[in-house]
Image (cartoon, rainbow, N blue to C red; front, side, top):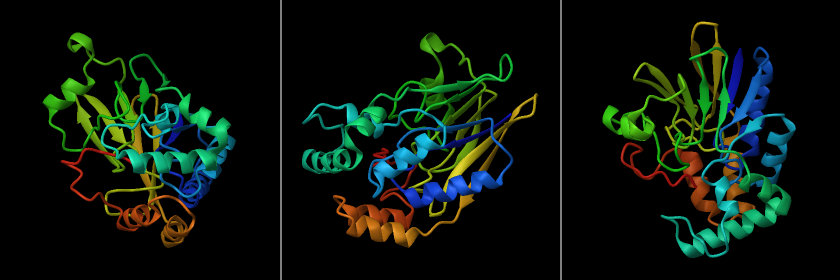
Length: 256
C-alpha cells in the first residue's frame, strides 16, 4: 500500500500543481490525503480547493480551514481583529459560499488500517485539536501529555502523520512513528521547495519518504504582492524566506 500525504497548501496553486505532477511520475497511490490548510494566505484559494477536490483526495480540516466556520467578529486567539477580518473577507470573496462551507465542514482526521495494530492516523496538528504543534525537538514528557489518551492510555495508532509546523521531519515516540509531512505551499525550514510525503506499507511496517519539488517561487510571491490579497507583501516575504520570524522551536505556530 502506498499513500501520498500533503498538507498546508495555503492557496499556492503553482506549488500544488508541481506536487501533483511529481505524484503522477511516481508509482500509483492507493490513497491521496490532504491534511488541511488548503486556502488561507495564498493568492489562489478557489483554484486550490477545486484542484484538490478534482484530484479525488481525502481531505481533513486544518486550523485555517476552520476559520471559515467562525462567526463575524470571532477572531482566533493570537490574531489581530482588523487584519483577520480583512483577510477573511477577501478569502470568502475569492472562494464563494460553497467552497467556504466545504472547508468549514471538513472532518478532523483520516485513518488507514492495513493490518491490526498498524493503523496510520492523519491529523492536521495533533490527535486532539487543530492548534497545538508537534515540533521535531519536543521532549518526550510533552509528547506524552499531547499524545497519550485520557488517563494515560496508549494510542490506537502506530503511525501519526500531520502538518501544521511546515517543517518536514520524522521521530520515534514510544515505539511509534511521528511524521510531519511538511508544507506544499509555505515551507518554513529554509528550503522554499514544495514538500509532501509518501507512506508505504510493506506488510510489516510503514516507511516514509519526504519529497521536495521545485516550482516558480518568485512568480507566486509576485502574485501575492500584486493580486489584491491583504498583507500580500508580508506573505510574499515569508514565502521567499521560507522561515518563521522566530525559531520554530520556540514559536507558537500561527500558520497564517
